Length: 328
Ligand SMILES: [Zn+2]
Ligand SMILES: [Zn+2]
View 1 (cartoon, protein in one colour):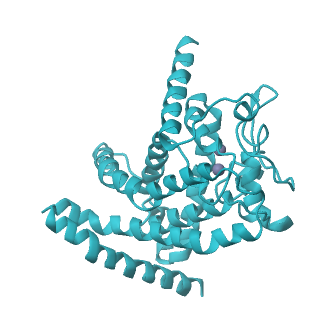
View 2 (spheres, protein in one colour):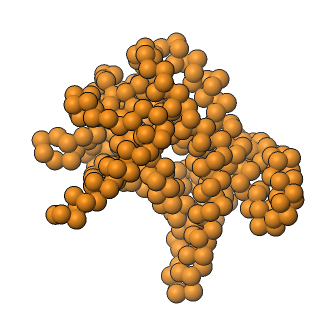
View 3 (cartoon, helix red, strand yellow):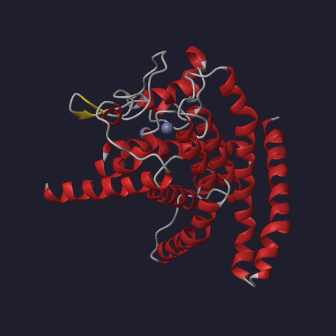
């Protein structure tokens, strides 16, 4: 049954992808007389379709849910509109297309070069022959592999001051809503996407599956950031990251900051809380606390209000973190 549901979803997705390609990207590529764009356009269409699908679910499902059972009233509408801008940049193409056409091609070259040096990849089908024939089984394995990387990347974003200088953009949101997931420094996004695209090539995930995997992850992340008083119950909280679980990660002075002189923090998992349980960082308290960064809430440190000021202040923090490192 799983397989038929999985292939039905894949069929709908591929049909939508073909239409976008045929009606939008192919005419553009033809007009620009760009053969390269024509070749990659089909895959790029998939990212656009997945992005539109996410925004539709966010507006039609998550937004009404937020109105029904919010954690707190939305008092800072400007902060929310900045987050909407981040979402539009991210999910409706701009960032993805930039990444797809300008960054990713270098990875293909890199992997080609590695191959000539005798270094192979870890294709799932080589390790477990025949496994990729069953769509949903390979999908679940890839999901676990990518989520494991996600957990450690997120821990590194907090562990290293240099990376935290950028990730702080995400945590400076004191009015968390369904739009807050994409509020990140663009440099952080590029880094993040590079690491995941490299893993995708390394394990040999099929492009359509990769797009669906990223779309599902992003949609779940939007749900987790929602201004929504929801937890998954005693057992469910161990299975999938809930809005309550992720809000605890954003809690001031608790979820993500220095504790007793050590870099601590809780609930770094992206989809599967099991990583936090295994590595001792899980926090399952039943509460919904204030979100933000301690020095911002208590000391008035400015992390910027609009898109450009947030990006610029992020670069300044990064330069400061680098120079502090050089002094040490
Ligand atoms: Zn974080
Ligand atoms: Zn978050």
